[in-house]
Length: 172
Image 1: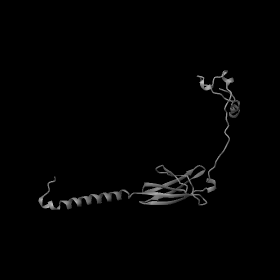
Image 2: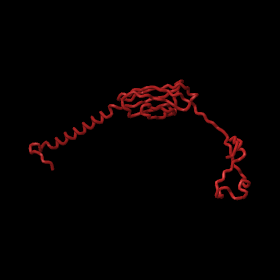
Image 3: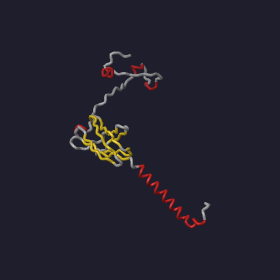
Image 4: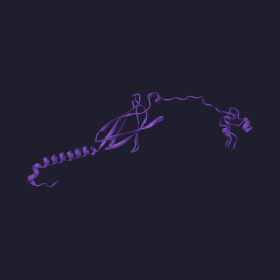
């Protein structure tokens, strides 16, 4: 046990409690100061006709940190040091758009308006009929009825249609 002077013996519980309160308060102050130099960027990307730009990429140029906007065009960067950041909006079919934002101990709200309308940003679905180059009868290639997968050699069969589609001039 700790050796305590007899005249402070009655004050021992008070000293311990005061010491614990000091430790707790100092850790609380340190935690508050740790967050003082940080903030975040909360933003929204909209099109030229003021509709949300869904699923576009927003990048902080200085640290290469990127996020993708949600379906409402919103994004969020957190735990950023205080300073001025360049935000780059990019995506397929979108001209790069650059805007600055200043983080200063709090979250800053930004609105990024890109120079493209919602109609141009819509999803495009391309459909095509796949061409099949399957050769059903391969007995003329191997001169036997043995299936190709059972022959212990590397064999590649190229159909006449494949040669036409690839515009092959020679076979080497």
